[in-house]
Image 1 (cartoon, rainbow, N blue to C red):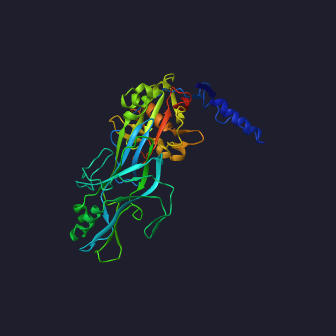
Image 2 (image 1 turned 120 degrees about the vertical axis):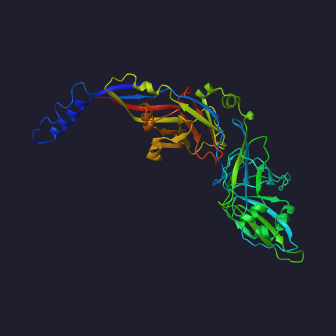
Image 3 (image 1 turned 120 degrees about the horizontal axis):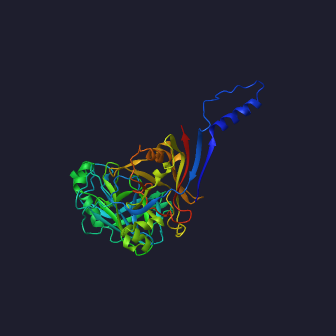
Length: 449
């Protein structure tokens, strides 16, 4: 990596342009602007990619996971970052009010159907589902986070049902229905269906009345001992994600009936993520769990699901102005912050790189804010993963300019996976000490008054 600097006489450039103009005109040009700039005035142009970056990875302590458009379910054992279990807590919505199942209702079956839109990890590993009834109510106005928990009844309504996620299987036939998107169908205990069907008319008077009579469900999977995957579920696509009761109104009534419950934005639901980082690689545990921050100079770790983020700082940024004279100014024309994929771990077949990263400024009070460059638009700002270059690049010239000028408070930057609350991705970044590792390429000008 190198630092370059060279100077251009502004006056020379100015009059060279005038000379070319004179050659293209038939009239004699006058010395327009002559004397406005002294011989000592110039613009200096420089480049550096050796700006010191100090960085490490750390655990994310708080992440909101309520009301997401995608929720996660499953268990995955990552050879680098350990095991992660993703569970869902949710209330249920009535498909219709004033439901009457009949005084002699017979429940044939009850199935929890989940709309599957994707996955992360190895879907060839068997997953064991557990479903529990909540023993306490959820609050539609309360915030829920990756560590939030609600007590449950001890009975597993799914009886340890085992399944393989099939995210590419379409046109599933269930009864007389053809489902044209991938689904997971978890059969539940018939006694649970009978319980719901015999709650009484008052419980089915309104959606709110039902939530008071039945608090909701916890859906989770048993921790895997190898591989595994996290499934992406659409909670509010009510023609896919449903709790379905199949029943007869009485033993003598042959007509098959069906009633279902689903989830809307009016219900409280959230993801819970539990991590066992002790099962991760030695290097990961040393840096992220034991806090050996200097290891971040070699390799950084990023993980969604309320997992791991990176912290960056530029301790010598102010030194860019050390050589300026009293009447000179530093202008940062371009600054590219480049995050390359680590070459030491090529496991992208199971753990694909994230679509994008997110970058946040750390304010003096510990809060965060978006960088000013973000508002220039994604085509300028960047942040998306490049399959060609196997890296992610951000343009942060305006941010660094304000920091250098003392107009932006900054205690460093947080780097996370974009959408970290609702996707299961992770990524490993080559640190500043690695060949072609994390770096900031800066082009700047020095303007002398």
